[in-house]
Length: 146
Image 1 (cartoon, rainbow, N blue to C red):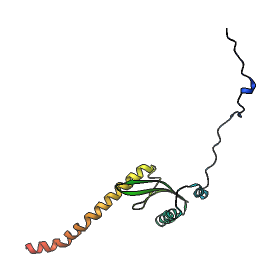
Image 2 (image 1 turned 135 degrees about the horizontal axis):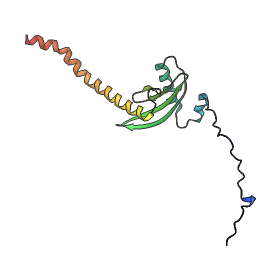
Image 3 (image 1 turned 90 degrees about the vertical axis):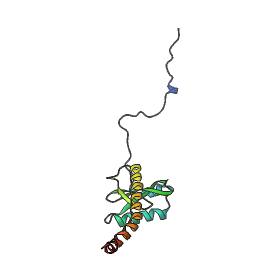
Image 4 (image 1 turned 120 degrees about the vertical axis):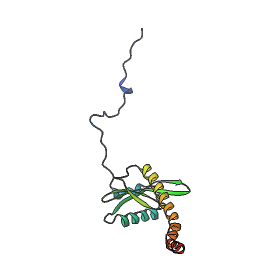
């Protein structure tokens, strides 16, 4: 017959008991976040800030942080998370465009959308020059037939 041993008091954990709810600290003020952002060259962040403030006229950038960089079809696209005093934006480069995070909450979806949109814009621009020439020459061709 085995004897049950009582745990000795020296083996008990001396951690404080957790009574009540967990405490979640308040968010860090946006003004101090740049101090904690790593691998974001200041000149790039400055360019993104200037771009957002030029596009979102009445907004002042409080924080801009590069989230990721992806190479797609031979182009490097940087994705930035930008907080202003009024809104939050995704800024994606090559070419640079901004998207409201209220409308585009997913960074991955927004990057895919941006790449598709820019591919379509470029295809339309390449197709525009020959079409413009055809429209210009069309009246001349008609007059020769008459």
